[in-house]
Structures are given as C-alpha cells and as structure tokens.
Length: 448
Image 1 (cartoon, rainbow, N blue to C red):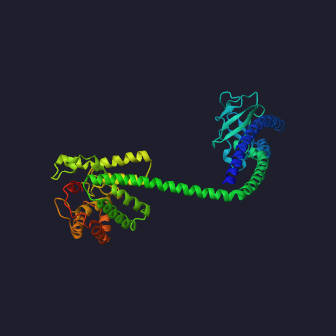
Image 2 (image 1 turned 90 degrees about the horizontal axis):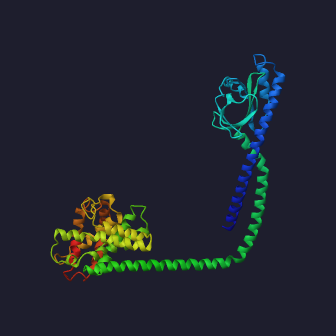
Image 3 (image 1 turned 135 degrees about the vertical axis):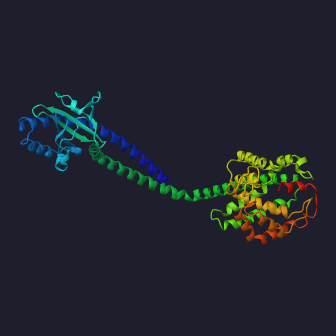
C-alpha cells in the first residue's frame, strides 16, 4: 500500500509537471508556427511571382500546383492558393481529391492573432500578411497566415492543423517526459527498498497490533449488538407483558418466523442466513406498538366497538414510529429496518383488505408477510378467554383457506412443507402455559 501510494504520488506529480510542460510547449510552438507561417507566406509568394508571370492559366497552373505539392511544412502544414472570390485554385490535396478544386473557403471566418474582430478570409487585407486561426470544415482549429499576391490575382494561405501542432509538441516533450519517468522509477525503487527493509523489521510488531485491534473492534461490535438486541427485546417483552400474553408468545413467534424464513431461503437465492436471523429477531417486536394503546381498550374483556378497534389498529403505526425513533438515535441498522417493516405491515393482507394502509401483494414487505402467518397461527392455537386453543389441523385448515386472500401463497406453501415442525414447536412451547384463562389475553386475540 505504501509503495502504491508513493507510486501514485510520483505519477500524479509527473503527470502534473508533464501537463504543465506540454501546455507551455504547445503555447511556444503555436507562437513559433504563427511566426513561421507568416515568413513562409512571404517567401513562397515571392517564389511564385518569380516563377509565374501573370494570372494563373492552363499553362501555369500545373507548375504552381507542383510547387505547392512539393512544399513540406512541419506538423502536417500545407499551402493553398485561392482565387479572388475565395475558391480553391491549388492545393496539395487535389492529387487525391480533385473535387476540392473550386471549393469555397473565402466565407470562413479568421480570428486574428492580435485578438481583433473576426474577419472573412476573402476580406483579409491585401497589403499585408495576416495571421490567425479558423475553424475548418472538419471542426478543427487551424493556424494560418494569408497573403494576397496581386501579380497572380490570388490569395496564398499557409494552413497548420492544431492536431499537427499537438504532434510537434508531443515530440518536443517526449524526451523530457522519458527523463522524468526514469527519475521517478529510480526514486520509487530506492523508496521501495527502504520501505521493505523497514517493514521486514517491524512487520511482526504491526501484525500483533493489527490482531489486537481487530479483536477489540470485534469485541466492541458484538457488545454493541448485544446491547441493542437486549434493549429492543426488553421493549418487546414490556409490550407483551402489558397485553397479558405469556412469556413464551414472543419465543413462539420468533421460532415460527425463523422456520418460515429458512424454508423460503431454499426457494429464494437472495435470502441468506443473516436475513433469516434478522427476521427471527425482529419478529418479536411485531406488537411493540401496543404500549401506546390505552388499557381500557387493550385489556377490555368484551367485544371492541368500531371506534375502539380503529384505536387498537394504531399499534402498527405506533410500533413503527417507536422503532424508527430508536433507529434515528442508533443510525442505520438492518435489524431495525426489518423490525419497522414487520411492526407496520404484519396485519396487512395479501388481497389488500388489511391495515393500516391496505397494501396488497408484493407491496407488503416479505418479513411482514412471514410474521402475518406466524402471528395468526399462534393466535389460533393459543387459548383465550373467549375460546379454546385450536388444534394444529384446525389452524392449518384456516391458514390454507386464507391462501391468496389473507396470506401470501408462497408463504402458505412453505408452511405446508414444514407444518410438522410448527406442530412440534406448538406442543413444546405451550405446555401448561396456556392452561390458565386470564381475561386480559382477550385484547391480544382481538388484535391478532
């Protein structure tokens, strides 16, 4: 890592220096090219005047075209000759593209090198050599110098593509870049040797320190998670005891929910062991919102009025808001996220007739759909003040009848695959705990 960081630092510094050096080189080359283009325009104009007498005609054109084709400029530069209206007369590209002859260039705007206003090429001064830049038909910047030749009644244009200048600049900076790269390699190599020597000497100490830090981080993480789980479980137990349920109610819900989640994991590759464990733990908090329901409603031994039932149903939103407040203090936590989903939606129904929001189908969170079946099964198979506990087979029939209406069909199918395990948990965890008929339990049965 150290060597990598050092290499990146050297590379970043080298790139920054190279970019700066290249920009300075490009600027210098541009200045030289503009000055050179002006000199080439004057020199070549004089040569054409000496070699050609009078305006171009059928006899003199081949000679001028040959001279232009023979002229070689650095950076892919070339010379064009235009008539007075700005059409191409001679150009080195005519040998491969004859159709260019007569093409109009005079309407192209030049930006003078003295930063004056733009001017059309055909309107450039006739009594001096003008330098500047223009955008070619290929949308590339070209550096040029132009001079009118009255003897030929034509305009000479020396053109230098920006891409050619970039090539010249690259060649100019290549040697310096190679030297800088070699120096960087030498520095990095020496640093690597020194770093390796230091690391070999102290790697044992660093390893022991790292192991100790990892152990301490893991220990504190586990302590924090245990404290969080204990706090949340305590709140769930508090809500459950206030409702008059037995202490095993939460244990049964957790067992049923964990069994269903594990079975679904066989069908859904996105479900892993951590997800199953979160559902198992979070299911115990499904009714935590009952702490916010008044005693006269929660513990009422008689049938609830419609208004009281609406008030009872608020335990879903109260529970979700309570857990959201805890999450706001603790920060992002997947267990609390799952618990919020379960508390809010475990009374929603697959067909959308549940509460509090009437969500249907896949719109209901999967953990809540799991707990919905587990909660109903436990309510059916538990003894209440107004009813006896149903047998497993009776509860199975009711759950099967709610497939596709009350319950997610996939979760009902998972329940049917493991119903003997459900029955085993029911027998083991009920024991004698449900033999009493404490009146306060009526509230829980109505809420379920």
